[in-house]
Length: 77
Ligand SMILES: [Ca+2]
Image (cartoon, rainbow, N blue to C red; front, side, top):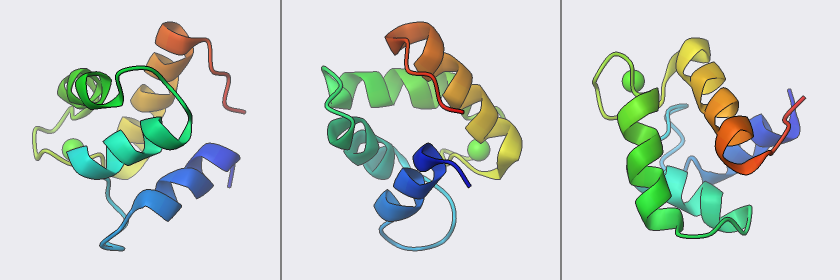
């Protein structure tokens, strides 16, 4: 498990193993990224492939990690 997944787990406040918009915003905030609220909204729109308003499953996490690299240059190994 990499650091980002650890972080996601930490911000998974309700512990259901999935990340909602509020939890994503907290994750961006913890990473000291600018405009966490707005960016979380934009990220969720792209990452939530199955449209259930949660980041769930390895595929969506992978999409999220790719976007963080594209948008912020954050490399998560
Ligand atoms: Ca989803």
